[in-house]
Image (cartoon, rainbow, N blue to C red):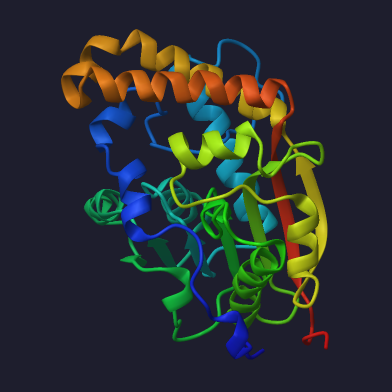
Length: 301
């Protein structure tokens, strides 16, 4: 599958945008994330109790990672691409539990890159690299992307340009997979009733993801159609409410240490962001999708 030239343009968050949010400091994030530093919505199926409890949060995050690896069809001795690898929790699970023999993680965060390298995971190659610049030596058996899709466009882009940007992502993923290979995608998204020019998108772009914008499910389905068939969709906004509530509680409990690490202003900004995000998901102004996509045998023209 070749990628059309018109689908190779730049859009969305820059490396500086990503670093503005994710390079605040691993020690700061470590105060309120789970011990694996998984910075995305957990999977709470069958898990009850206080989401701020370390053991329960870790269990729910591991369930999420295992879910995506299974949906991507990654098995022992397979090759995995993790687009937006964060601090490496999926890569670690893939190598230690699934037996993946070769995995590549892409990030634009220098802090995350350094941390994943420090883990010395066997067979893992972590790169500070935009997915648009990635050129693998051979196809992957499966691809996972958790919490990166939100960074692929920005608020000022017209609808048709957003579709083009998303389609470029799916085109490249399809080119890296064999026929019927799978991509497991997790992204925050706007619900159908949310206004693209409203306060929720502006809030996320200003306080959470600079240079970024939330997609709609309709945009994802339109953009992927030439390259992938969607085989499963989970809408898990309730899971994000629980995850955000757990993070927020843990951050408040660690206020003194957090302020010593990043200062009172940054602490307040993150405290406000986590609580406001929880309210946004509770009101269903935004949601969380976990989408399984299967590469088509050949490109649809």
